[in-house]
Image (cartoon, rainbow, N blue to C red; front, top):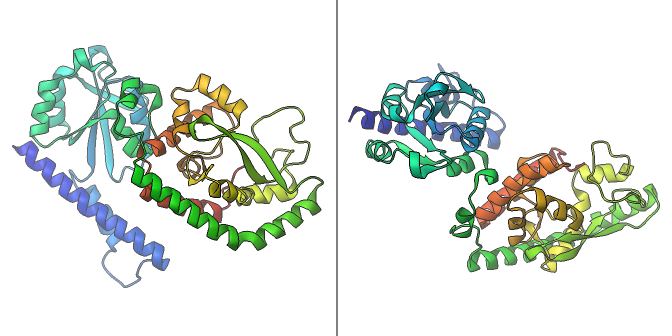
Length: 379
């Protein structure tokens, strides 16, 4: 009963402090500064003080020590400790207790779960067991659930905390029978209507800018203003993408390769176009034609798709929605120029595919504006 009361108390404090923190951030964003009225302490200090109180932060215990458990541990350790406190890992192997895995201490065994929760004042448990059938402590978890402890599937907590899907630890059945990974007819219709109307208005508005960019490209280096290239789109169908040319005309005489930092193939004007993502403007034509969306996974070239689908699990799931001019991965991750980067980007892309919605599209568009204003474009 004491554990249940403590959990309720913790949740109340966390909700109050998070609200105060969000209020501070929002007011700061709108006004550019927080009020300078002389007070013993600001609301910001009050929120931080609340999180220093015993039981204020969410205290998380991870059940398991496998790849999913270690991946979630790394995600939680990389985030701010203001809201969460990763207490440790629970294992089946007695010999691992007291040791560290990826910076997180193994604090007990499955048989000690109830006592560890009570001792370390845990209020959230993430189940990250690779094989649950034989080792899942069902009765202990049911007892803890009845005491008010939050029990999470490790995959879901990983998604919530990182905005990515842990694709290396996904079972095919979790995708095949998932209620997500499907776009409802209403969302699909509203998304297409929004794409068409915004692209049409945007195309008319940027026509003068497009003319100016065309002149700059012609003055900078010989070659065409526009660059067309085959990309892989919805249902893995190829289509022709339009871009402003940002490289020299013979940039790919030696074959296709990813752009690199300070790539010598990029022209002077092209470097600025890429930095501010202005080279993507002509893709509004692709959106109007229904080949692309404003928001979605960025389309890849067939040669790269062929390579990546053989190396990265579930890669083709990114082709279940229209590719986008911008995407969730582009606002969350740096420009990827390797198989390893593509692996991480796919985790973001599949998060978008799984949870695609109008609200998420609006969020990506707003974050894209921030990225552009900061000049965090592609290479």
